[in-house]
Image 1 (cartoon, helix red, strand yellow):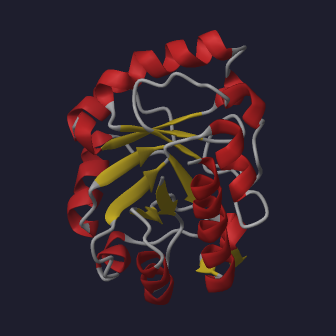
Image 2 (image 1 turned 45 degrees about the vertical axis):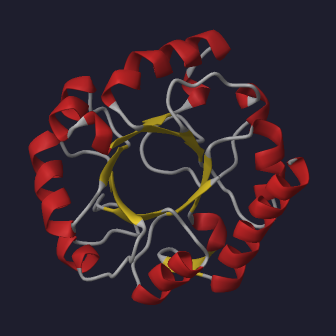
Length: 209
């Protein structure tokens, strides 16, 4: 189970994520987001061994690549209309492709969409809502149970200590993405909420073994 903590803006929160064993730390480069950071601000945050992820909504490949270099990013998380050509220009091994299951009419369409993008990404992130940035609300986990994904995938959407265990039990993703559900305010993580969420997810995994 990989943990990603997204929307980070402060060194103290990055340190908490690292201490809790998060695999990914995420920085938002969408100017309209209340969690927006500049590439320079992100570069100044020491993330230790965590993989560094940039969230991009409107930018295309050349701008994304420039931000990745400036902010020392390992992955680009594509939240917008960026096509496969953009992902291939960035490098498939450096792309997390966001998919919105609610856009799909059923399991078959969702799995076909994942197959379509499998060759141009390393991970998928399945997000609540129907587009843009994160919705901050849980999605219908029932439609994801038993999902056959061609790449490892992260579950996102309103996850926190109150529902992390249930999410793991319902869909068995390869990882969870925490953001608004572990905050005191946008961009300001609550250490106790993040710790409880990670513990809940880890506890469910131990019970399932």
